[in-house]
Image 1 (cartoon, rainbow, N blue to C red):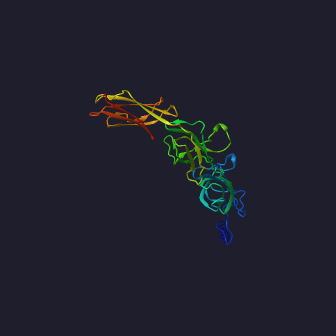
Image 2 (image 1 turned 90 degrees about the vertical axis):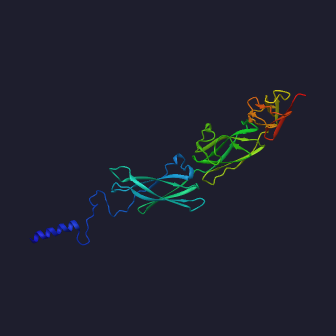
Image 3 (image 1 turned 135 degrees about the vertical axis):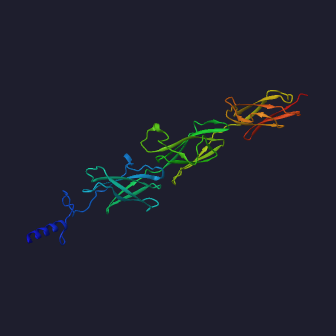
Length: 346
């Protein structure tokens, strides 16, 4: 009986421990050393940098941080890491923090882990990213592409548009996408775009040059009737502002209007008088000129306003009012006015 009690005591000591002696549950794992320094082999990568070794600037300064780690003898469960970004340029010391979750890449081995986290820094410049996993830290420094915004106005291929000229233009940004704010003086943007938020398209203003750089752009046309105009631009969500361009516009010439009624004398009341307005600009046919007709005394006319056609002509019909001995017909385009008076036959 005493022998059996001794054997039982030994078994209990082996299974539960006796005194300071404990059983290490990992001792049976081949290669495991409980006294070795913990090293998760933490790595930081930036998948967006490509071959440029810099980060492309996207709207809001968003970029991706990829963490990799190797943790042997780990059960197949995710682990978390803290990620901090510190700005090294102005404002120096600004910090952004996030939490990344690393998951096993292979559910059989489980020791190789990877996880992505997105950070945003609208200030661009150079940043330092630090990742911390179970007390182990890793740091990497990287820069954004230098921010630039360039305005190009083509004054050589512009054409007449009504009372002024239209000019093709392009604004190129070193960012990848985002929105542009166009700042205009004495000019307007043709089309339906909102000048405070114009979407940038990927690529340069001149893709035929095939330059190896990341860029986005906006192309459009400007309309001006002034002798000079200004074009400025800013990248929405950043402090980036382009140097404004001051453009000397082409002189469109002197606008002249000529009113040609279909009759020389005023016909009877209730009759219809057809009127043609001829517009010339600098002596040449002026198409697209906005015309408005004014008739005294007031009467019915159709249409009241419109644009001159390709031949520089605008046509309308006027109803002769009752009890009148004369009728004044004026054509108005901007500050230019010209007319003719029809009187009854003597």
